[in-house]
Image 1 (cartoon, rainbow, N blue to C red):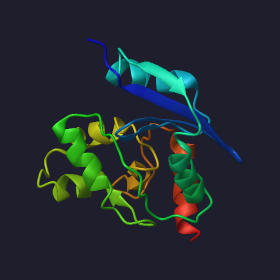
Image 2 (image 1 turned 180 degrees about the horizontal axis):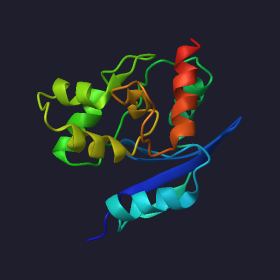
Image 3 (image 1 turned 60 degrees about the horizontal axis):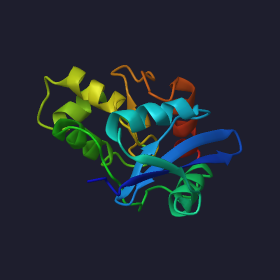
Length: 170
């Protein structure tokens, strides 16, 4: 029996931003890095959807694209989009915790571990944050080092800095 599930994708090009996004019929499942290359999306697809077809379709993804552009313009502080998380139970719990960080605020990795009642799991929390497939939407850019410094980010520190700048200017 063949799967009828498909992975729809498009490239958002807005000002200095070029971001690949992808969704299933269940919801948005991937938001790539600023100026990211298509291979970033292909690696994600091969890991989580190895047997399904990838279809470029801007129309199906229009609502997701609109929300992301509104965020990049500083006109949106939260997202209403349906999401299709693809991670372990622990990763999903970390990603849900990230969604509780308010727009314009930051938390440390230790704060997230404590929020999850796992204060000794800071490194595991960091790995889960690094595996976040939904940049911007799941706001891992709001997680900083204990000393307030910008630390690792799948999209690169420049993207993290740019996202935090959007949130602090509003």
